[in-house]
Amino acid sequence: MEVESNPVKEYLFSYIKKSEKQFQKLFSQKKMDVIINDITKNCYQKVSLMNNKEESLGVFATGILHYMLTNAFLTSQRKIEHKGIEIDIIIPDLKTLEKDPKKTLIICIPKESNENSIKEKLNQIHKIQSEKQNIWFVLTRDIELKVKTYVIQKENSSFSKIIYDIANFVNVQGSNKFKILRV
Image 1 (cartoon, rainbow, N blue to C red):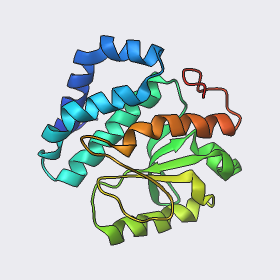
Image 2 (cartoon, helix red, strand yellow):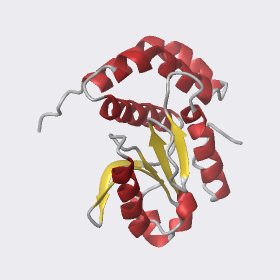
Image 3 (cartoon, rainbow, N blue to C red):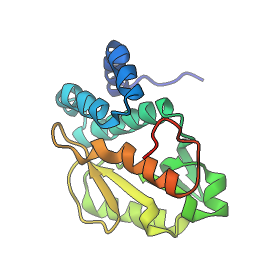
Image 4 (cartoon, rainbow, N blue to C red):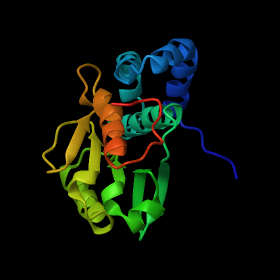
């Protein structure tokens, strides 16, 4: 099976590769927000001009989170389906969601900006995650959803704080797997 190339992912991971040495130092200093801010500051403009802006930024945010979670050694599953509902990121995994929703975080990254579609996606997620506070959305603009949201933008992006909030969530839930970030 051949994997389809994606210009957003290629651009993002090319930038990350060029910055790897600097980012590893920042990881060791637990400066996750600095890494996210650096990536968004330097890649956002070009990514937002690729194809459909919302779709490109959704792929961009997903790629950043994939990179951050991998480097933080955090157990997660990405791009899975449960009961016919697509899940972008689930922490730690589907098995935990089925056993104990309180210990499971679902992060949804819509690839569009249509408010009704985003709210419909939230309604779908509610069907599999009963804990409202454990559903987070990453958006390209601020929308009132009554769940935790992060907005990815070039500067002053609330998205840069998501990794710390994930660390807090994991630490509160009693998991000791998030070794790189003790908060």
